[in-house]
Length: 337
Image (cartoon, rainbow, N blue to C red):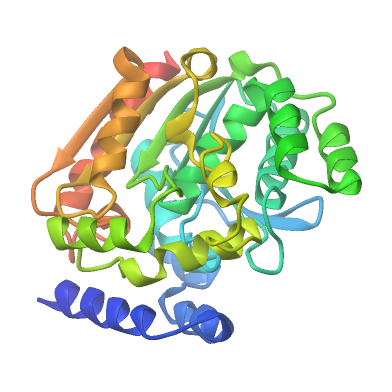
């Protein structure tokens, strides 16, 4: 009952706001955050480190009993690219670290509309290069929920198909400064073999839908969290273009914005993926399409009647989130050997 009221309240709030409310939503989200000292008392973790990666920061969380110290999970938080932070996701990341017995890096990537595509992908690339140089794990797992899962997939597509990424950006962007920055960022990339697995929790993988599409999906799924009226708005804020502009279709069908449109050749270059979702998730159709795209490389599990990103809720509020966490731990364990 508490979860339902919380989700419905969040959905009502998001449904009735516009871009000008984003700063206030971000502040409100901090209510759900947890200081490092609190996390360190709740979970069996070492003191959380704050690491600087370029112009962003990240929480580095290491469990006291770390069976997979030679591996690392880079986790990108959700929030539709316009909100969310390590503060808000710290408790979940600590639970990941403890239950999966693996160090977790939780980056605070730049948010839209202040920074637009492909800025967040470049933040992710900086993170991978930092991890490869400074932490040097044997295996890197990359995961995220919702928009964080979108960033996971789009950034790994960029790293594993850098030429395609640059070619695509030349078609989408008329900005020589950004293109030069992208070219520089793609120098000295990690060996793609270090990326061992992908974890997508309620992944947002298709930005090409219209408002009408999303309202139909919302009616079909009865998702208590996502407001379909704001789906296109956040995509507009992330891309920096309006849905009525001629370039909208070209933008939103790019695999670096909508990974569900990646080619078979691009997917072959990616590691295995674990996907968790619920049947009440408004994005469930796209999740199934992504699963088909990955084929035998995909481990998909769908929970009946569960909503968008139910996995990030603590088991006391959503018992099935424990099953999801156990599945993540099993996936990491299998691929770490």
